[in-house]
Length: 95
Image 1 (cartoon, rainbow, N blue to C red):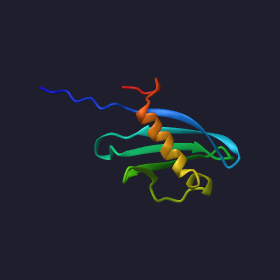
Image 2: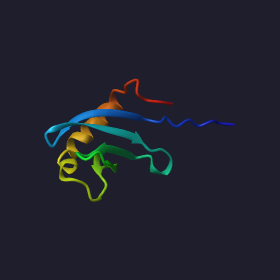
Image 3: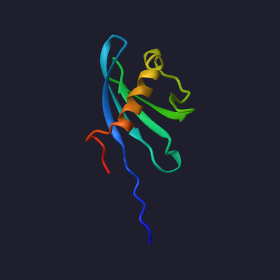
């Protein structure tokens, strides 16, 4: 009998967006949605914004959805944060 473990990847990064430092929380989904990260961030009013990023042609792209412009403007930087974390994992990963 083989046991298959799937690593749960979660991390938080600070990113300056729309003139202020914002906390972005990333969580990699497993199973059938293995190539997807869920991301959440809080807007200026304290509302939590949830969105997904999917790997397409070696780039992490925001999945089409209605989001504030400041999130779309940082898509490339969010890609870089994910890739950096996957290449250089920190102690924030949980198994």
